[in-house]
Image (cartoon, rainbow, N blue to C red; front, top):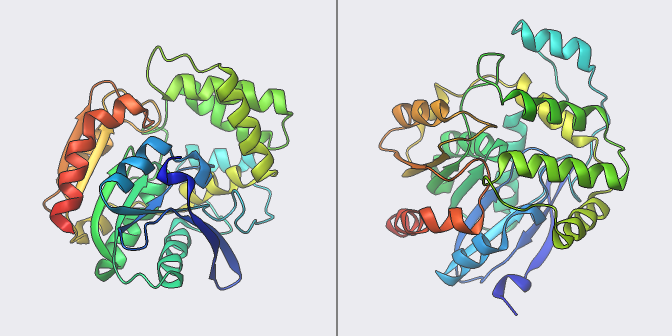
Length: 304
């Protein structure tokens, strides 16, 4: 049995919002708060990354962002036609909550676990949330690892590729898709944003997709999280205040968040390091972790 098979779970509260978390331990390990991306549940974190951190005496703590998994849900129904027009013309967009609210969820989780200071690791939307945690709560942050993310608010000039964007809109518009529709959509998405040439449509992938779907039940939070991203102001000034040692990891051919975003953040975050991975797109497959695990370990150990 891997060490990641043993964990504790519970809820943290941010006012009326309940955040479900999983603490992989060990309790004596150096805590690392892991913040996931758009629509992702805590079960979407790859176990090879969790195990790697545990093997080196770190304590991975993962959680469902608000509006996904077992955390509190909201009820708004975005108007996609109106919001798309606003997005295209770069007009203000309203949402039920912001990326800043989601950052506060992470802080409340640390407080619930009586953790005064932790390493922060965020990927994609989770990287946006983690930027705010690192900038606004510097005393809580030992180090910051930013994977496949951006400090800019997505715009028509800095958006995912059209195939990815179309699939994102399809998911937003159809939160109650059938099980087979969800499986087909997930296979298509992972094939586009994962490593080129990887065989995705396997019995194991289909089984995991069904398990994750059953765990979450309601897929409507994806659209509201996406709206929160679009409604939030860019963080280009904010990230310049980050004091923690920062490692930026980005795939050379990321179709979700373009590489130029990594270069821009590297210029703006003081004393940051940038690791570009040729074979990486947007996900952290085992082969991709091998490309940066030594950089990550050195980064975390120097800040411990």
